[in-house]
Image 1 (spheres, each protein chain N blue to C red):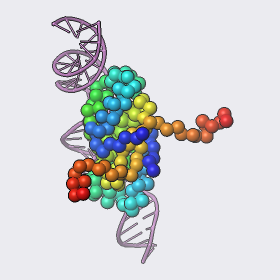
Image 2 (cartoon, each protein chain N blue to C red; image 1 turned 90 degrees about the horizontal axis):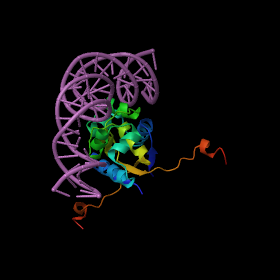
Image 3 (cartoon, rainbow over the protein chains, first blue to last red; image 1 turned 45 degrees about the horizontal axis):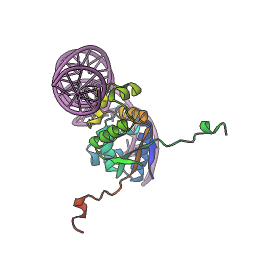
Length: 83
Length: 83
DNA sequence: TGTATTTATCGGATATGGCGCATAGACTCA
DNA sequence: TGAGTCTATGCGCCATATCCGATAAATACA
């Protein structure tokens, strides 16, 4: 349902996945958002200094939404090592 | 549980609410994140050009998490006008 | 009312986004 | 193999985030 992301690379990966699911090229997504293909590329590769408004524009064009939620536990192998 | 935001002002409002629930001043939150009080202020007032990394740092310090979800319907009065 | 805390804002400096324009690699497919 | 598409990257430009230092404005509270 909703995918968490804690760093820009994860955000970029989420966006790339969503874009491909919509069968859009970076160029086409850029057109929908008023951004350049280069800018889409930068976001997807995890540009940490991308602007919030840019991120929101991309999410909106992909019919996605930004959400803020309490940190959920991530049961990584490391956290389970003592069980 | 998770609050949606579609523009920088809403994001800022969410952060301010969470900060106050943690009983932190902008100064204290700045200390936790390595950001200046001024920067926290800018984010909370809805700076659209804030950086993603800055946003993520603030969310992390507040034990919050960024999530991406499909757009949920928002039943505004306008959308209901024809019913 | 007066004082302390909190938040918003200013000037200057530095770094970087996103723009236009362009191209180099990758990859797909005929 | 070659053409077409897609993604990453380059340069110059302007705008602006964030930094430092400082202060004004707003708010809380005794």
